[in-house]
Image (cartoon, rainbow over all chains, first blue to last red; front, side, top):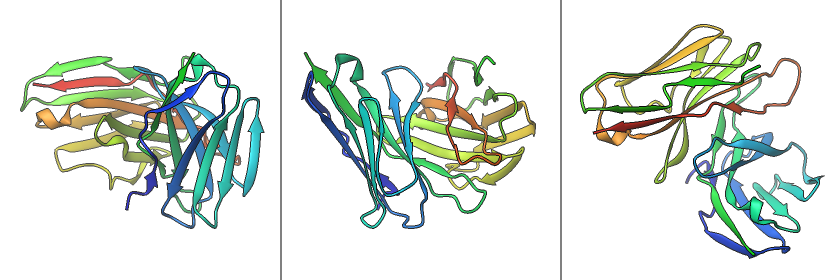
Length: 113
Length: 116
């Protein structure tokens, strides 16, 4: 089992709709969870982080965390063509002061006009 | 700050040659990470340092790979000898923990390595 798993896609969503991206992780003790966006040929950039169970909203983005199910998701409302990118789920699997941040293989999202 | 600086941006070499990738983290950051990205395997953590000390190198594929961080402003990843399967984009990233729980990674632009 991979430490962080994502569906590779591609996920095609019409403009203006909600895009839903999912991620599962193997280490039940993980405490920190992140979503990065990576445009083709560019570096990953952080868009959301979440530490507590429940929802966290930032503009059009909502991160959801369910530690009991070891599941993290990202919702993008009112999807725009500029949201077309690969979305990487990342989990900090370190302990105490360690910081072992593991990435999933990413989900490619395409927003069709 | 200029961000995380990696060099070279592109490297083309022949199988068997030594390759050295370089990284300058953001000043004041206490964590430095080396990742490798391929289509098949995604973004893999190779090694990370905390305050210049290697903490976890379990992702380093084999003895051909080595990484050093002689000071807080410089790190290298060396492959010797290189093989075609090492072809990938290599990213360096840094972060600052301190007393904060914000673990945002700042990525460099990456080095596109092609081993022929």
